[in-house]
Length: 306
Ligand SMILES: Cc1cc2nc3c(=O)[nH]c(=O)nc-3n(C[C@H](O)[C@H](O)[C@H](O)COP(=O)(O)OP(=O)(O)OC[C@H]3O[C@@H](n4cnc5c(N)ncnc54)[C@H](O)[C@@H]3O)c2cc1C
Image (tube, rainbow, N blue to C red; front, side, top):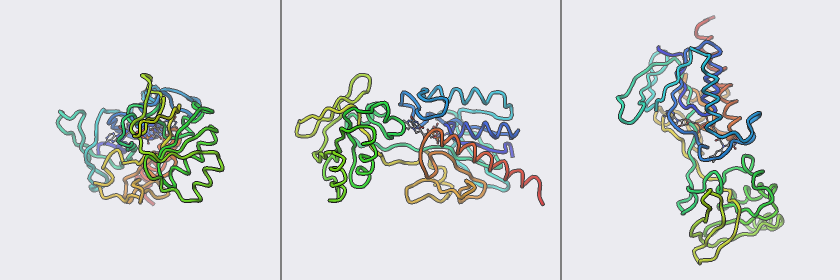
């Protein structure tokens, strides 16, 4: 085997795992296959000692702090396949689409490949994503506190999110973009928090050149001024590697892991947004650290049999 551990994905989870495994003198390849989920956001909030740091700067610091650990190799490499073989895995990947594929072998693989958010196909959502259109009040609620806000979605998801966001602003409108599928109880709970509901179909979001939200235009031509819109968008795995390898996924499409952060495929681990649970950069980093420790302990057990 060429490597002890192949880490796929160099976001918070992957970089943190590489740091810990480097400190264990493990031979690691960190395959950096592209941009992180939050690249369109101006700042990462709630990350201890780095509150508000630009996403690219957080990753730059992560790469910089790997430099002393010469057993850690970082390559721009998009991994395309992983195949179990005796003692570990064979993987293939490419630097760019034009490059010839490279093959490598590793005793363990850590998937830190993250997720992607599927935004409604309406003009404005993608363009304003990360500034005027937000996914999480814990990450960005403070920046828009006290302002007129919208919460987009239907049914239980939008009810829960609107009630949560009401912590940050007393002026909230739920936008269901067609029938809201809200139960009488949900409507009552929203009313109690003075949250109004608009069920008209939306034509587009209106934004400023700085990607701030200015308002919402409905199909009937009417407009509603709002400073930001929150939604819980459905998510997809950023890579199909786990599914292609036959690893178990949860009903919500996350990569299932056991208490030892191992997937249903022996020696294949996963950490960060790709796994179930709360999604935050700091938690992804903590997850990467924990997975690295568990992987090092599993390798140590293999090297020091009873
Ligand atoms: C708009 C937005 C703003 C956010 N703001 C905040 C915030 O303020 N505070 C906060 O705590 N959290 C925030 N988050 C959440 C945070 O971005 C994620 O929780 C965090 O990025 C998860 O880290 P990760 O390492 O698991 O995944 P990612 O950061 O998504 O990293 C995964 C990496 O794997 C790479 N990859 C995927 N497939 C392959 C492959 N086949 N080969 C090689 N590499 C691959 C991807 O290119 C990516 O670089 C925000 C999210 C969004 C969408």
